[in-house]
Length: 363
Image (cartoon, rainbow, N blue to C red):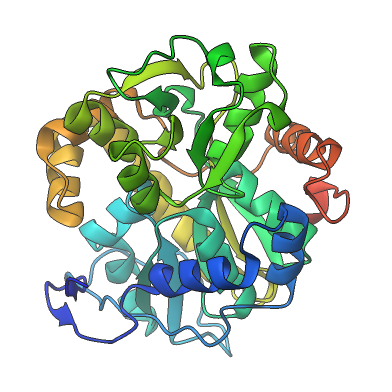
């Protein structure tokens, strides 16, 4: 495992600096090839409660006047945030602006990196995180499992940032050619909903493919070695596969999925620390606005943060719109409910859910 660095460029030598590896191992050992119904039930039992996380310390100098009129009694001393190798929270971490806003309040930030949404929400459910972001589907499976989360905001849609790809020399030309083929995607991820929608659009059923439940790093290896026939994946992994192995697109998410990201918090944290949640959303929105207006600087910054080459990140940035943070509106709740209903019809949820029940209502 390569050493990670915190927000100040210092190496984090903690043996649990990459919690997604532990989380993935738990999921594969405990779940094997069981159904998503079992996956959701196990999430509700809090697997991952023993996980620890490497921290990225505050950076930058004090700036900006706090948005609060007075100090709240009982405010926490640290906010624990989960992020992935894409999205606004990675930029928020890299720029250090949240730390600068929080420092006058005596609050620091602890960052933890994940490869995908399901293990991030597992940590949220276990009480190891306060705030984080995922795609659409992971939040639905977590809510169905009884995880104590609330939606606090969402990004703009970005359907072109997810695609169903095949190797450049593959004989497969259409989605309908996937009947009986092995298709890789992360279990319970936003790519899971996308592949369901793509199959329906082109006349196949979910049962017509062989699902290979793999998180992005493992899926990339399987894809490049020819162990799977196709891969449903999002940027920057999608762009890396195009540039690194000449992957060819069968279909992207246009017309199939909004492909938004959602910002979520533990329900108790959002209730007790609503001022910190508001501040995090405010700073995330500012960073998102900057990112949309500055794709080249964003790619340069992400190249440093992720180790992905600049050309790959520029390709991803040309189609990415999943930035910013907007409070949840009725239309977005309805989109998310449609996704939940789809998984429920497929028998993949342990129970039907009302997405609105998990939407944060700030006081």
